[in-house]
Length: 238
Image (cartoon, rainbow, N blue to C red; front, side):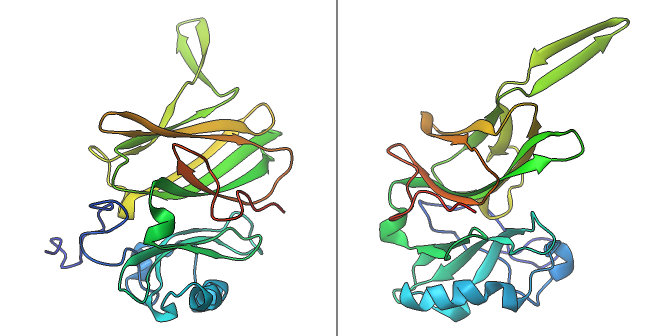
């Protein structure tokens, strides 16, 4: 099955952490004008390729699910798809701080999202911001982020009304085209870094991921109904 332009679909996961058309992600050197806004090169994947070998993942199978540069001269945040020795899908994550990690089917079981988070100062407004980049499993049908202190302003004539923003949608499987099932958010707030991401399935909430930080940094989470711990480490701090 192909799109009208002859390119394979970039749909979210079809079942659990498997994708209907094989390993998810883009190949470096292919159609980069359509996806590579972060100017990712093979050299940016060198840490992931090294980590892949020790994780039992084929280094040549890496595909870029999503990539972002939150600092111009820093390592990019990277999410990649890959294959293990059993030809099963794995997800790799590089948080820009600490060693990259891979999660294959045994580690992904029970998880609903792999999420990279980077709290940063929001210089233009003199406040704080939280950058979120993640990918969800097939169980997730929608996700929202609630950012403490974020507001909506309505002006009608001379009357100005300020209300709490409340949950803001970052993923909706039914109505939005989320390439490979990715979520992304870059929210400013007037108070130090504090937010929550909620993940919902067909029958209600699957997991909540609270985000509270004292300092800028880069963090890796594996969201589930039980915890946000990824393997042996819940977070990566700068």
